Length: 461
Ligand code: SAH
Image 1: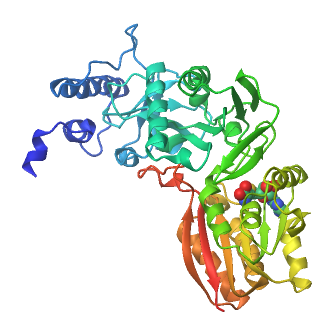
Image 2 (image 1 turned 120 degrees about the horizontal axis):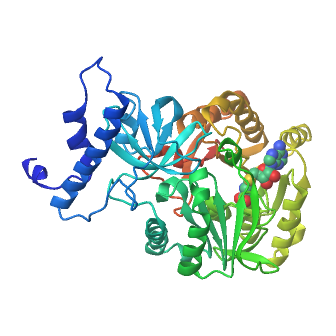
Image 3 (image 1 turned 90 degrees about the horizontal axis):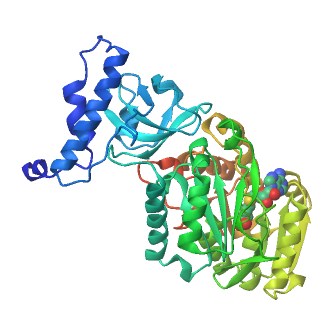
């Protein structure tokens, strides 16, 4: 252990500031004292880096001005010390220096110890999202270039383009860029900005992506629900280049048409790529039911791999039109495919009443619980469809069931599904636990990144 002491700490704040500067319990530091302590602590962090041969930079801007500060309440720095990148409004004691929406702020603990550089969202409950833990880092165009290049290099290292020319290039917090999502569909990139601070760097990021990826088009789809919470307008349209007349993405040897302008999310559910392939691999000679099928992802894999029949249900007629187009694009046997535009909750009941049975069922619903506050209502929805799913399966049948709700944990999802099996009076075992594909990495200190959970269950034969 003693050798670790001589090494420079990658977490200078943990060692240096908290012990020496934390005031006695019950004593409240004066605001101006906190602010100047924040600056001097950050500068201490800098000098420790300097001693370790690190680069020289500063908290003060180039023009000598102090950055705005977000000062946390006492004890509320814990999650940041564990490198969780969100600062909730309830944790904040004071905001100094009147940052505008989207500005970069220095986040400090109650004693003025520097914690992180973060993007400020005046109206959101998540008031700041961390850009960097390094006091020396300057949040400028170079910073974004470096982070974007790192994200691209990671995907290259993982050889993800061997399976697909569609992939998530930047996965927000997990790629160190909160609020920024970039998906690639062949030669087209789609960018989604979900926070005020990411929004501010929109043009810089578009220029960097244009330079590093050379796409024919960068299209903006900043129309996620989170924008309203950030006080931002929805915005969609071309940022660079021109959209080709038809965009297709190749995935595990299949082709999918993607509508980046009007489709859901950024146009396609890239996160399910590997899970779709698994469904395909198990679909031969089976009667398949694909609920919430969107543009036919799971259905097409099942058709290609010799499923006997595939019934696909979605509430969106536009999605089903693209699904039919995808059958054509892949020259699959349309006679084995049936597409139904319906509400899945009602359609499953109808199928039950008709005494229809299937060998393989996919349930991939939209996000029922964006946050934990919606968990109870969402749980009822998940239980309902899973119960009906179990009832529609033949003995030995497989249920592929998913939740992409941030507000539902793995454990809770498994419990809901177990409750559904019990009520449906089937015995089932988990044969696979699934998650999003590797282009959606999950930062260890940010478990919220693991939003997609899937179970493959086999009911007793
Ligand atoms: N499995 C798909 C992605 C599913 S996304 C894939 O691999 O590409 C969820 C889908 O559920 C969307 O297409 C949406 O139109 C559909 N949807 C949402 N609520 C629905 C409902 N109540 N009934 C039927 N479809 C619904």
